[in-house]
Every structure is written in C-alpha cells, then in structure tokens.
Length: 357
Image (cartoon, rainbow, N blue to C red; front, side, top):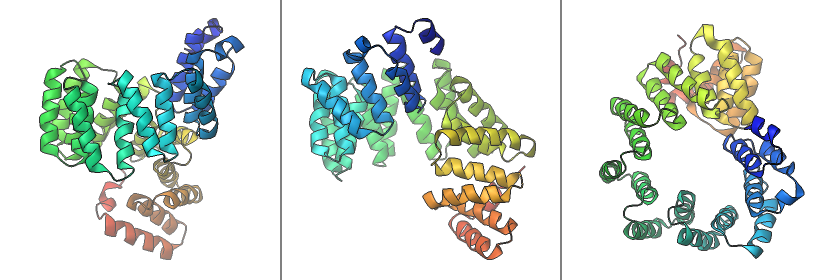
C-alpha cells in the first residue's frame, strides 16, 4: 500500500487505505502523518475528515477529535460521524449521550458491530446489566437473522456465564452462517477458556478450512498449543500470525515468551520482545517478557529494570516470580525471597511452568 501511494500520491482512496492500515497496526502517528500529506482539496472531503478523526482518536487526542467531530456534525449526521460522537461521549463518561448517538447509528446501520458493542458497554459502565440485557433482547427480536446481533447476544451470554445457552446460540449461528468464521472463533475461545483444548483445536481446524489468513485464529491456536505443552506447535502458530501481520504485538510477545524457554532461541526472542516494546512501551506483559529474556541472558540489571516497571503496572504472580529470581541473582535475597513467596502462594505451578527447556 505504501508503494501504491508512492506511485499515485494524489490518490485519496490509497491514502485513506494506508492510514487505516496504520491504525489497524496500532500506529496512529504514522496514520496522522499519512493524512497530513494530503492535498488541501482532499482534506475538505467528508471521507478525509472521518479518517482524520479516527486517527486523532487512535492517538489519544480526544480534545482535537472532539473539535473535528463537532465541526463535521454541523454539515452531516452520517453513521460514521455519529459513531465517533458516541465513542467520544463514552470516553467522557457521558453514557446517556453516547447511547443517543449510538442508537442513531443503529437506525441507519442496524448491524454495525462497533455501535452494538459500545451500546452494551455504555450500560455496563453504569452497572445497568438488566437494561443491557433487555436492549439486546429487543435487538435480537428485531433482527433474528442478523449475525452481528446474534454474536452480540452470544458474547453477552458468555459474559453472564450462561455457557449452556451460549453453546446453543453458537450452534445455531454456525448452522445459519456456515461460511462465517466468527461463530467458530468464539466457540473455540469458549472451549479454550473451559480447558477443553482438544475441542478448541478441532474447532479451529474447521475455521482454517474457511479462512487460512485469520490472525486471531492463529493467535488462539498458539495459546491452545501452549496450554497443551506443545511449545514447538505454538511457535508455528504464532509465526503464521506474524507472517500475516509482522507488527502484531500479541504475536511478537507470545512468540518471544515461548522461545524464551529454549536457550538456542533466546537471542531471537529478545529481538521480538524489543520490537513489541517499541509499539507498546507501557504494557506489563511486554515488559515482563523483555525482562525475563534479559534474565535468561544473564543481564540481571537490565532484567530488574524492565520487571520493576512491569510490577509497578500489574502485580501479577508471574511478574513477581521473575523479579524475585532476578533479585536473588543480584544478591538481594531478602527482597527476592519475599516476591517468590508471594508469587508461589498465588500460583504454586509457576515453579514448574517457568522452567526453561
């Protein structure tokens, strides 16, 4: 897409598509830069304004996005603008205002998945689960054959721990939409969360027969193999995800963590973890992975730095365990011992699961 834009720099569709690709890769700064290089005439189009608002939202500049949406709404109340309006109101905790905007989106685009999910989230943000349930039931009654609405209901059942009903709804959705991968992916995820790894693996195989380029499915397949102890197979799945999206943070981090167990691959894993940190420098998962890899290489000062940052953001047992081991290596056995004891009290299996191969 970059090459396409280079060959046709005046093509607005190419520019918008590239900006969208940057946003999907969680790189909003590049999206903004791509859009800022548009011509003045292009910047006056509604398609550009909407894309620029998304880039501002993605970059966390809610103030600028709010101004952009307000200006655009004077001329148009299009579904995309109303969705942005609802999202910004939600972020500002104006949940009633968000629902008003989202309901307008759904009047024009009743199957808009983003509006459907955000509408439910607006109720949950106010602890109004019964109201959310009632609104979803209404949507299902209004559109019984809509896959996005069905999937919203299924995810709600799972969230409400109604797994038997969720399974029935998933089976019905799969039968009614035999070419859709979404019910299969949710079903596989449900099996995985229940510890039914063989069923999750079988369901994912059915999904791959429909779509062998589904990144989310490869990520889940990697997790299934990790949980099964099939680390080599997990590596294969994560690498398939990265072949489709080389900047996927979750694939980079998960692959790095699996490879951290195997001494010959620690250097490769370290490169992957560094790439992940470049994209999400505040992520406790990524900081933990990077710190653990420094530990595996014997770089204990560097390991402590990353793991301390990780622990400050999330007091997870695995981070405590890694940092405890690191402190022990640095000679601070009192502090290390306390962290190890705290970690193992929460998760006694850490001592076995974190053993390198």
